[in-house]
Length: 506
Image (cartoon, rainbow, N blue to C red):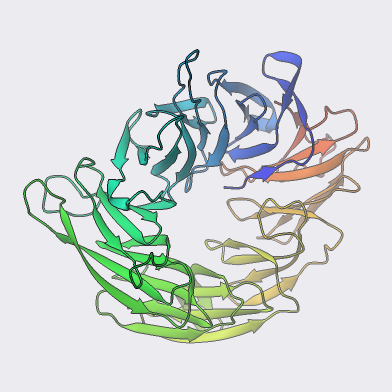
């Protein structure tokens, strides 16, 4: 899900209160809706779009007026929900403490709310999108080393976890398992909390049971910090900072009374250098583990310990998965592409086994992209020059579209454009030039280009693609007859119509 920050002060009409100033610096898309945060006032607003791009509903998320540190984040894996959080407030003799809250927001407004056990400074959603880790509790006298885990599938319920086993260390991140097969009546759900020199594994269905803590000490001092973990069945693969080894924990069934339902055993996997990227490919049985380290792409079979290695440029930092044919091989099969930081992409054609590599080859480009958008389902990779690499960066120009299936690149002569976003469904590339109000949509299936100039001196400040399957986007504008910070609703096939794109505002 795309997010962006609008630079400068943006004033929008408040919900139900024409003329009231609403100051937003952050906007997130939903399916056929958009969410904006006024951090100054701690207010979150939702504008829902109907047919033809007209606004057909508004909703405001209400927090206590004493709430501090309001933030919004996308919910991973979902285009119809975002997360809104406030830190609460530490009380004193004259004022009660305000507990932190997390709210699930959809196009219609609030969908669920969780009130936590006190104020907290930070929250972070899991990459799987089901859990949220809330950490760094706030207090005036004593530091309370605890966290709470929110299951977004369990309305209103949070799970407190005691961190006594971490020796006073504050967890920096967490990873959560999907429901795992277990000998008990209920599936096993495991939370892995990262802290300096150690990793703690909790049974989420028995939060009061002491966790299994695995130290990563070196010579009696704190060892590498765990910074990433991936669950592969009942195994947890852990990447630690600047390490050329991966820690693999197997969650063996444990039938002891009153204890955890698992007993971890430990082994390691050696890599060619510090691991920069870790991912799991579920298309093989068992799933293959992919580790990008140094100039080597490692493919591991965790069941047998087998390994395959593919040479890649040192600058590569991303690995994409896609299924399709290739020149000389009409069979649709699983494939990989690694890329980033250099004018070369590496393709890997895979067999059925986790380490089965049929072939690997390189594709040279005219320039090194600084940002990319991968549309795995459509078999496309959009390459950008300029900007910082974020899908919502203020300045990026696409210079080529790569067809992953036939490994051919189509150059784009759009150097004058400095806004570009790929629609979530991958069929539309929306383009804009901020200096002259130019808007365009490139249909990636047909190659057709729609374009127009906005009237009245309007200037485009940002593009935001919407989900919902309609390939729509919002163009935030300044100047002209529209209110400062209003947006235009862009729809395929309508840029070249006689009528101007519909306007919207909060």
